[in-house]
Image (cartoon, rainbow, N blue to C red; front, side, top):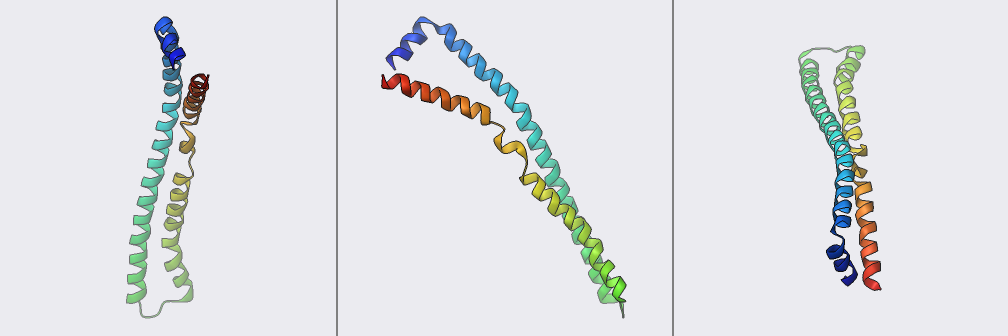
Length: 126
């Protein structure tokens, strides 16, 4: 740590340059994070709306099935298939929202911090 303190006191411009590089790396990473969050929010909203439409259509189908005296076999498939389509869309949106690339958005910044910490430990061990 003595060497690090000596470097900071004698050449503070190196610390400023290092902090500036961190800021540049972070400013490069944060737009990707924002885009991933927007994508996930949009897909979640679409999944929620599709679930609502599927629930409403399922309720209508259930009321039609209960109120009609005799439902032909072809109509039964329609009563099942119509609410199933928005349900499939909702499931796809939910899965797509969870499998986005936003998880590793800070990977470069994290790697740089780990590399700096390894360097500091190496200097401290000397």
